[in-house]
Every structure is written in C-alpha cells, then in structure tokens.
Amino acid sequence: MSDETLNGATPAADQPQGPTFTVEKLYVKDLSFEAPNAPQVFNEQGQPDLQMKLNQKVQRLAENAFEVSLGITLTCTLNSKTAYLAEVEQAGVFGLGGMEDQMLDAMLGIQCPNILYPYAAAIIGQLITSGGFPPFPMQPINFDALYAETLRQRAEQMGQSGNTLANAETAGNA
Image (cartoon, rainbow, N blue to C red; front, side, top):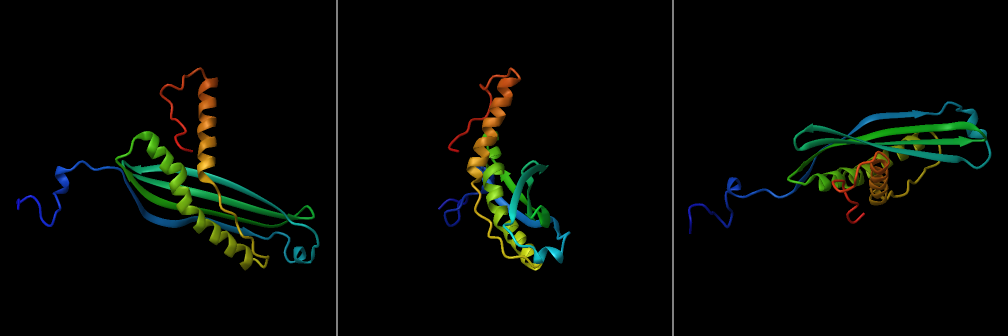
C-alpha cells in the first residue's frame, strides 16, 4: 500500500477539482405585506384579480461565491381596489466552482432559483393568510423555460447590435 493513499483516498492537492455546487446560506432579504383597504375590503364581493411579478438578481461575492436573489410580488385587486400586496426577496449564497461560463450562467439562472422558489412561495402564502385573506397556492415555475427565454432575448439583442453569436452562449438543453 502506498503512503499516498489511505482507505482508497488520494490527497486533494494532487487531483484537479471538477465542478462544485454548494448552498452556503438561505435567507429572507426583504419582506413586505400591505392591505391598504382593510378592513373594508373584507366585505367586498367579486372575483379577485391576482398579478405576480418575478425577478432575479445575481451578485458575485467572491471568485466562487454568488448571491442569488429571487423577488416575488403578488398583487391582489378586488373591484379595482387593492386587497393586498405581498412581496418577498428570498436570497441565498451559493458556492459554484470549476465550471465553464456557460454552465455557471445556467446554474445561476436555473438551479439557484429552483432552490429559492419554494421558500419564497411559502413565505408569500404565510403573509397572505396572516393578513386575513384566503390562501393562495403558488404554482411551480419552470425556470428552465424562463432561462431559455432569457438566452433567446440575449441572442436577439446581440443580433440587433451587430454582434455575432459565434462566441455567445447557447441554450443547451433548455
């Protein structure tokens, strides 16, 4: 048995590292709930109109560390009056290393929001019921499709500016 191996393990310094992905921290970055027309809105009759806005921000914190924030704003109106406005910005710090730029971009645009979304949806649901309104079950979001659309828009913008797509990212499997 060689001195370099112990129980089948080799020293980490001798081996090149492959892609790594870790969830370092998950947290609520911002949270808001407003019911500007309460308590009168509780007596309103009619079909509520719900609108959801979704946004994502990515910030590089270090060479292999990124903060990804997923913002959800849910606005409910009833008879042209705002019943409630619920907002959450769920964030996480993710460690991503050993990846090509295209794979890194896809991980930040698909995998990270997929991890954050259930936490954000649960918080929105709690805010709504705590505000005295019926529960609103949030449907799953296809971040693969959203990412593919983002890549399509990037390619379109590059085409309009006269750049070629030779060095641009491809849609991959999305």
